[in-house]
Figure 1 (cartoon, one colour):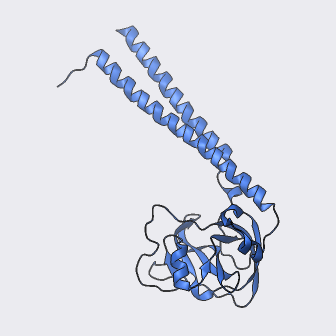
Figure 2 (tube, rainbow, N blue to C red):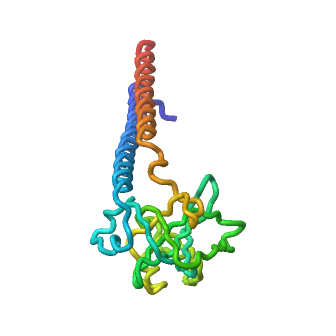
Figure 3 (cartoon, rainbow, N blue to C red):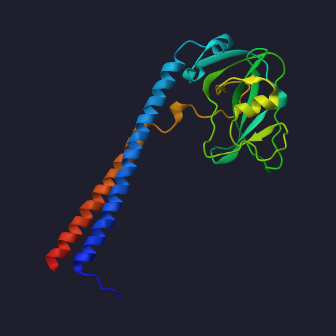
Length: 243
């Protein structure tokens, strides 16, 4: 059995503590960066949602649609009820389910996906939820957001079989355009919570974890790092005084 000298023991303890302090500080700085990101998102949401409400012609004439994130929109048209999309792996208050994305007409040639919010998965994944059709011309209101694609998911479809409603793992606009046969706008619309056509709407940025909470978590990580460092120093000094 290898016996370590007091110096070797102290060296190992010091290295382990330094690794722990480095990790805790890294977590603290990560929380600070998250706070900055949230502030930027909230500022963008507040500024853009306060701008004028956009109509279909405004969207179609925009050369940089992604710059319109969080702008309010009011659109008149009809839903393509035969082409509902179920975006998989969503949760709401502990329930597992889908976000329902239904194509909506911008003009004769262009559609935009409408995020109607969350519905639970039901008793089995083998049975897809029934979605009642919305008939006729309607007016919808909401805000623009990205058509998110998870970079960790390689394929949008679980199988090669195409059945509607279509369950997808990520929003692939090129795939959907080919399946539906019409151009799909780059951004999607998230309906307001009071919309008659919404299920349980996704949370708005203003209801996410606030920057102050991220900073609070950062303080906790830095405090743990300082406590670990101070306690280790105290133990080493005490050990040295006894030797």
